[in-house]
Image (tube, rainbow, N blue to C red; front, side, top):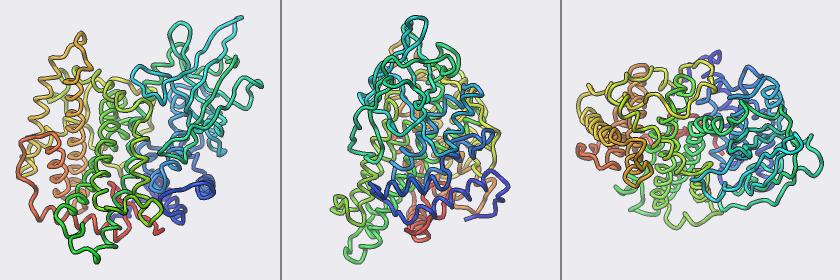
Length: 557
């Protein structure tokens, strides 16, 4: 893999930090980190000043690129999602309202907290489509000319150890406020820590309850414009959706790596094992393709926050909706490779079951798939009428992860995009010849069909009908196909000779997505193409490289 990027670039600095974290966490292995082992892992992150990753460079941190943040948390997430997400990335999600709309004092306080190794937690509002895990909320009430915070939430991540709290509270007039609270200066008795909430998955994450009772709220605690808290929360959710897939991709990498390890280590025991059977090879190869597809749309969403903040919303929602489904289905298929070993939680392959169990819980996010579908349904009719098959393709930089980006202006992110930056890639690649060209033509045909269906939907129609929701599923897969095609095209043009410039993987990826959509596509990939992809699965395992777009060197445990 190419290693010529200079450390004077943001990409070079990112790779150095990622490699350092990978080496530091290697002795922990993968799988269950509990008790002292989890505490040790957290201390290692503190030693590497992990909190600085969540602070923009202008406030003394290391955050230069949002796609880079999604990558630098992967060494932790590959080992344990409770570590990488619970102790790590969730702090950025909690701080996002401050980076988006906070004043100078709020940003400086949040930066100092995170740079000093502190934690910040977020308590989001209840929404109509939420799951029961996040149903309750806080209320901001006025009395005697002062505002006070009341109410409780059952499950707040890092509820007990986070000094900073980003609280989204409903008001008496039906609006919401985002509040930044320093729990160390609250009056005694105004905030009570409730019991911990135990979960089946992510059991290393500290979910628990918080209860406010007559807690005074000064004016300087309000983040952003008064009464606009819900709008701020919705804008911040675009950022959350763009980043969440990176965490899942890291976990899925461990799932695939564990499955191939089992297949390699047991191949002498079973003459019909997964390395020899057609089914086993297809499952392992398909898992690699699912990871590359997922990382492609994740890349578009994260870099789009920098380059296309007013247009990235649909792509971010499609990424957060599609990636969990692809990777959970992939994990299910891979479980057949392990057979009985799948149930041996404490054995050498126990990391598989743990990651496969944690993936669905993390994929719920704030309100699960319903929120992501709702975000898509609200936008796609207009995009179909005004953007699809009309707009130009996005700038090449969007899908070139080695190129640096301008600073992200999160205040410019909009909850509903003015156009769709991703699907035009299909039209831009319509001149590709051969089998790949036929696949592109099939996806363009699907996009035309979707445009016709969505364009007929008007605001007065029932948007959340089974038929409309099924159309959003199809759009999300088309979006993933376009992002993957764009990644291949940019590597073909700028980095010929690399794996991602090879038409083998993108042909396999479009076949896989086309089959999910039931498209009229060419026959199954040729045996030689499948052989190249399976060789890549084995090669990355043997050479200790990650299965995502970056082929990161992994330290041996």
